[in-house]
Length: 80
Length: 421
Image 1 (cartoon, rainbow over the protein chains, first blue to last red):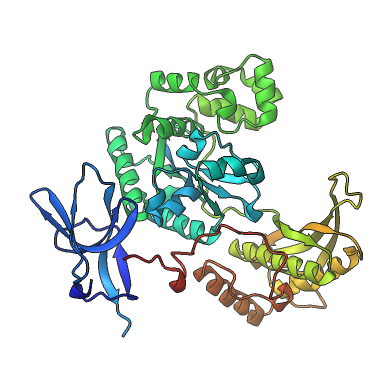
Image 2: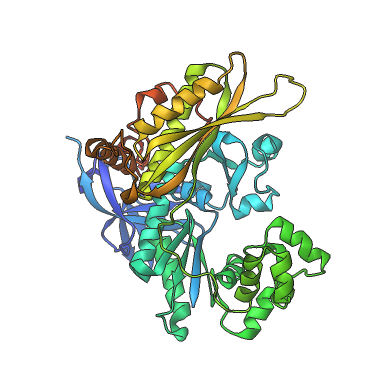
């Protein structure tokens, strides 16, 4: 998530009470794995953007995946 | 109306929040010392894993079915419980919530219009699940005992909310509840009821009050029958119930033979009991220490308990003052060569701290010591763990319980936060 200013080893604050919004950074549960990604919802299509050159985006197929939003990322504590 | 909000398989659910890969898989949590199963989710129940079954009896089944297994992580469960209860208090109002146990609360819903009960309950359920990750079931009825009956159906009906608001619904629910599953029916009562051919909660509801008084523990039995009839007899309690006796006791993780280790274990139990005492703003006037030995004849399991009691010169809640009395008792009880399995401490003679009888020779607890205790409790509470303790409780704590499958303290330690990619 370097593209969003979140680096390996950083601490993020999660607010589970917020409603997931397209365009925000979230913690997503995809088939039992927790991922930090930017959420993109366009016309009922859900995509998870890694914003890191080595990782490709994930198109979520809700019909075959176990998918949910675990929480919204609100702050980052960066380790310099 | 009242409600009970009950977390589903609470300990398992806490573990699952931070490990979504075990969603829809069987999970069990073991008791202290990894002894017995104390929490299992629906999937584990379906495998035939019974409550309180010793772990060693199920090891094969657990391995074969790849059941996820956890040692009890009270640090995590305590913190998650606080979160659930905090959300509940936000939604229902601070003064409407009676925290009944780590995973259940009663709610006073007398201020909610009957037609809004269901939507209100669903909102509570959804919000708790979204904010904390812990699923809950809700039972709503006129009395606490009927709430408990309703809640059993909430766990099964898929919706998670059951409201018993008409005579027909109540009777149907009671007919489908075995008498031993009713709240407040202990094993001895269940036996007596079955002898009378009272098999369902509905039949219990229609029992003669005099019979209940004679056979089901006097007032308690009468109250039970009345509650099933919709007459509220068990009021909402204040959150902080003052206990008349406080005990702290544990099995050791392994057999203990040295006096030093016994002193350490007892010191740590005294500290824990004293903390509970201070939490209810009380002082204690006497302390009892007991040690349980394995019978030296190894062929039979017949543990023996030996105890001694000491009166305190002045009732106190200061750990060091209690230790001063407790440790000599350990020395007096200790026998060289005995093998110890368990120790415990019981505080009694408990009174509110503002009514301490002064002693002519020694004053009450000094303000300085009290302040020290307050600081220590605050730090230990904020860490959800004992991070500051008296040196007499030792440093190695080898006698401490086994926790071979413990999960990280995700919510209370920086170095144990959940990692994601």
